[in-house]
Amino acid sequence: MSLTRINANVISLIGQRNLRTNAERMSKSIERLSSGFRINSGADDPSGLVISELLRAQVGGVTIAQQNAEQGVNLIKTAEGALMEVSNLLQQIRNLAVSAASDSTHNEDSRGALQRQVASAMTTIDQIGSTTTYAGRALLDGSAGTKVQIRDTTHIAAANLTASAGEGLADVDVTTAATKATKDTSHAYADTGTTVANPGTITINNKQITVIATDTVQDVIDKINDETTTTGVVASWDAGNTVVQLDQNYYGSDKLIDYAESADILNGASAFLENGIDAVATVTWGDTTTATMNAGKGLVLEDSAGDQITLTTAGNAVSTWSDALNVTQGLLSFQIGVNAYETASMAVDSVSTTDLGTTGLLANIDISTVAGANSALTIVDEAIDEVSTMRGRLGAFLTNELQATSRALAAAQENLTASESAIRNSDFGAQMSEFTISQILVQSATSFLAQANSLPQMVLQLVRGV
Image 1 (cartoon, rainbow, N blue to C red):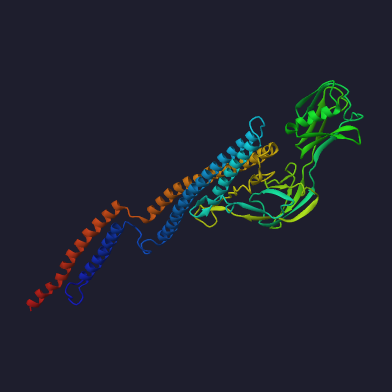
Image 2 (cartoon, rainbow, N blue to C red):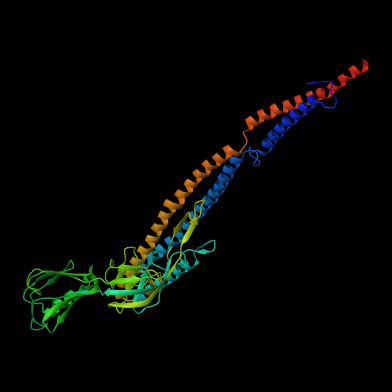
């Protein structure tokens, strides 16, 4: 490299190039130290930027999904708290019904007062069902679950459906009508005033009835009927056959006449067991899917999914009841994942008194009579079971889905953030070392560039020697 050519100072160009290189290196270090990021543009690390942006999007989604899960926990706790109050009110109603069923402590007037207490409690239940909301979202009015409108009240008494029921108008095709157990005893008597053949005991559905030697057939009938509240069995005189006929008050295979006698009183000392028959139906939902309902008892139709429809006495006939129900489906849905459709859903049914109950509606109970109080106990127990089941489902959903998912999302957020940080963020120790090196090199390059710029002046020595 010649130092005698002043029109091309190559050594200066070399110094300038190295100064620019080191200045850019120091500038990059300053950028990374001041921003805290190793990657500030695509030029810094193209593939790293792509992965980092994907991880950033995932971290952001996980953060929001975790917030959704936590808000879902609060929502479910709000619904469960309201249901607990409904349970308490139902327990109060049940206690009132038990009290009203006893003649020993109540008369017609006091039972009327108890019924007014029941009506007040049911008004509160309806109010809880219609006003329980979370951020404006109604929770217990049925809009967050399966809501049923009974359009054919002549043939359908009640309906308690799940999310498996298709939305729209449903037809109920009764293929088997329910029956009550019935049986004629075998010992024939001239009339009801005849003294029975033998004294002894009659046992009906585990209830023992004592028959004495002077009892007539009518006396035995009366004694059996005195225990109807316990046994469900009514005795009557079958005038055509001159025997006593036993009839179960209620429909279904679980409503028995389990009869035995210690001697020949009504049935030749023989025992028998008679069952009723349960109703069976095929239901066509609004989405054209069908369900076979043969798992229920008596007038209660039930399918394998737990959907229940209760027939009225008029509806207990082999026939098709068209457009009997109108089903509306709703869900509480929570986005608990970073991708589309990664949701957790939960149905919460209505707690209105017009929706609770299986064999009858809670809204229709009346404990102003002994018979009404006894019937109310069955319906209230069904309502308690429904609300308890709802609370159990909510608790399981809260624990097994929302809270478990929230913990998993927290761990994912931690790990994803660490991964994104390792790719994108600056290592300050390494960058400070890089900055120090580049700073020294810039200073060195500047100094030697000054020296390189002064070298052409040596040519003047040659000029002076001429």
